[in-house]
Length: 205
Image 1 (tube, rainbow, N blue to C red):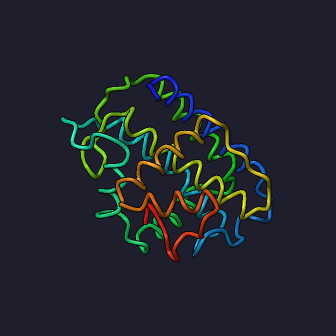
Image 2 (image 1 turned 90 degrees about the vertical axis):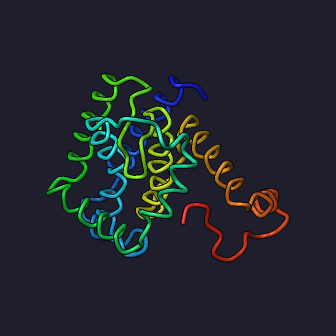
């Protein structure tokens, strides 16, 4: 997938996430969502797919050290995936959404999408795991929006069928992660109905 479709997929993923956020009941923000997170926490965490992108676009790196989204996830799992830290960042991001979370998320989305139009595909971002081109980082943000969009839809009990373009990016990334993890056979056998996935199977944790 080349640069323009990736940017389109990101915009569609953001728009779809906003539609889901708009469906959160007024009294539903404190409801259980995912693990230790409430709906507010989950939405706050997911909004980081946009705010981290914005922050990194404003702090360019000097050289490319991470060549693709799979390398990003592999490095992130080694250095940034402490469950307690992730949980706390989600809770704090949820609180940062303020008294009107849906409106805050919409403002974030509008600002980030507008800012994205001003930066080139090959801008090197200083992400925590190493310098990475914008166009290589975007699929990781699409992945987060799609996966946690599914989590949010489940938590609030609404139907969710992500748009095709971000879904393709997410599935492609999952297949690449399966290949890199040495678990492609488990995934192939499961999705073709031959056997269930092993207990605890996880490509990103």
